[in-house]
Length: 121
Length: 351
Image: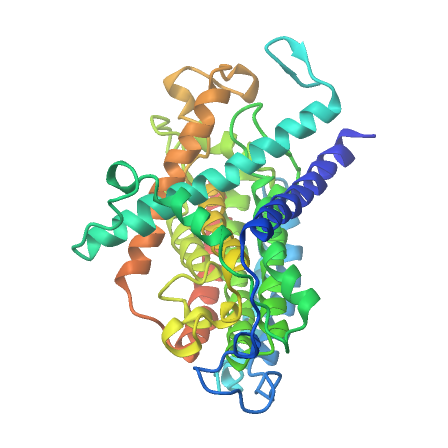
């Protein structure tokens, strides 16, 4: 296996380590802790009174436009990072080119701003 | 490829060592942060002593706490979506472990040495959003649902300033490899002066400030603690968690604070290195071997300084309102960091 893939294998080990350490501690805890479930204990918490309706109640998703904007800017970041590493080589050409790119993006942000999208209504 | 004290270690041994190192790198900062800052510093700032009974100056308090949490009953509400409810804290903890894998601790003391380390760090740091949304949704609780949604909105809003603030560092260093970024800072010079190298906190100060604000928000520490506001949302997505599952969220929160501070110290404070001009080093190969031992201690020291900043702000400022929080991210931080990118690029090309 190449060293490149091997270093990603380390990532897998780290993820497994997290699951294992959490599982181990939860297992130790299960040996030590009491378990006396009662109806009141198993009720959904709602400030001490019996819950009204169910927990998955309707609520306004206020930020889905933010989420769309987030995707746009995140993809933009994917484009800017490779450019950032090679800026020394491209010098002025790269600078002007990225200036235009960022300008268009800022235009988009200003448009969203003027449209009132960036308000938490 | 990898040997210790002239003994060649097989691959499984290396992996085991790395995982053990990772456990130490996650749990040790978490414990230290909780004791030094959350128990003691917070108490002193509020003119009280904090824990004093367990061990000298309450230093054994942590073990007492873990022992207490281990014995707590594990309550899972009847209405909860049990499987997802149980998975959520583990995913939050996993995000921390994946994040620490990329932090370099010395010239040879690293877990992974990705060419795109910055990308990787930014990518895995947002896995915790999944865990938080899962916790909020599966609890079947109105507070948790609101808290989870608020957390998701906040984390994606502050992900962007963080990504854009790191961009300035990548432009200056010309690489996304964290080892190379450390090298560029310690072997660099500011206007020909190389006494302190070129830690990017000096030349990228705007980026540093934006990054630390974004870290504060990603950790949902006050003043950005809307999602877990205990006075209105009863700890938000953690409302229904009790016993050890709650403790895993808690450990995850402070371990992530430590790991984010390590990433920040790598990006902005020179990471494991000391300015190379002090010892006449010029490249990665000429760095003395003892840096592999001193490096982790240096990273740890820098981490403590940064976490002190985070905690100081946490204990000092009142909470933002949700709309102020979003407005601050989109109308202040993102334009500033975009301007920072362009100014950095112009200066980089000009010099």
